[in-house]
Amino acid sequence: MGPHPAVAAIRLAVRRVLHDILTEHTPAPETRRAPAPGAARPAATDAERVPAPGTRRTITPAQPPHEQPPASSRLLPQALDSARAGGTPMSREVPPPPLVLVACSGGADSMALASALAFEAPKLGIRAGGITVDHGLQPGSDLRADEVVLRLTEMGLTPAESIAVTVGRDGGPEAAARDARYAALDAAAERHGAAAVLLGHTRDDQAETVLLGLARGSGIRSLSGMAAVSGADGRYRRPFLHLDRQTARKACMAQSLPVWDDPHNADPAYTRSRLRHEGLPALEKALGKGVVEALARTAQLSRDDADALDAWASQAEASVRDAAGLLECAKLYALPPAVRRRILRRAAIEAGAPAGSLFARHIEEVDRLITGWRGQGAINLPGKVVAQRQGGRLVIRQG
Image (tube, rainbow, N blue to C red; front, side, top):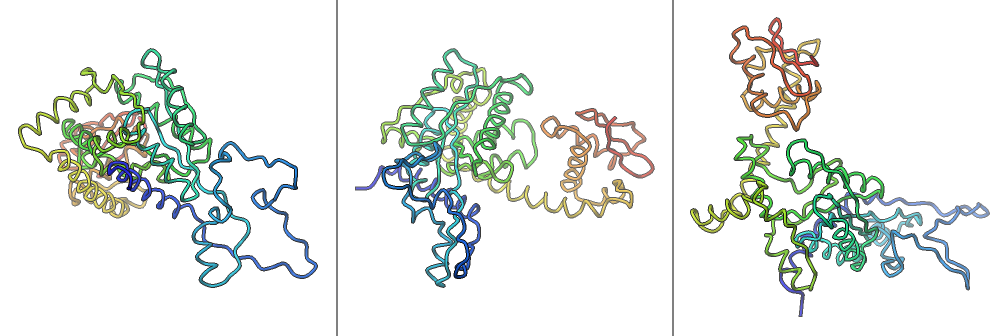
């Protein structure tokens, strides 16, 4: 008898992502000629050395003894296939397998993700660890973080650690906590040399993100929600974007995994909480079931459109600059608004405007210097950036 359907679903989702990571971080197979007779043999690597009888072998904490795969499984798949197909000698110097971390709060989504990672990673020869972030926003949060680390360790994930952060106030409590969390995860990934960090966002989270973007009156990029792959060099992966929140919870129940329900998720003081417990249920009552799935589908369609427009803007930008690199207003005017505003936004960010503080209304004001020129003065943008029209050129620079 196989695993519970919910458990099978989360494992399959994680397996697919791990295959992608393994493919991306597996170097092309290298061959090495046998040494000539009498030539010195290259020094053995740590993975090649066999301890003498009666001695102990030291295994680094990143791969505890019970997780060490057999030597054959540590050879990367491409090298094995190459050797079997062509008979070429495989290099004995195999790089260490990639490390994948899971960001785990202790909630049902991330606990289900951690359990699936712990199950699937060893089968692919991938090292797996876990990180929990202590935001310090609730009494006893440090104890909760210690409990999560213990659960991750019991699953066999290593390293497993808690990181305490200080949450600022910029952008509101939710945005500030998110910024602090991602900064901690970035630092942990760099410190451990992780190839990727898995996040437990589900299809329900995606639907909420789309509605929040819609409520802000944001553009199509905001409506595209969260990407399955994001961050520097594709660091962050979201395997559960096509799974609903209930599937993750059922998977935890089927595996008897204890979960922690963050009281902030039910606190009406937070916008996302109100949307989750009041807004979405009201939409489903008015429009019928399937709203979450439709919103998630909208996110994917919006992302495809936004990617195409971004590519168009990148190609068009060089054609609207003069020999000195200044933007020519007449050429900008001839572009479709969606393409033109992307170029303006990129120019403002390059001049020093923080992307997170640059809103649609700012870009609309700059756009009026192109489409509604009446001799108006300079436009002040976040980051002390100024945009103004001079001699048919649009100048965006630090004020």
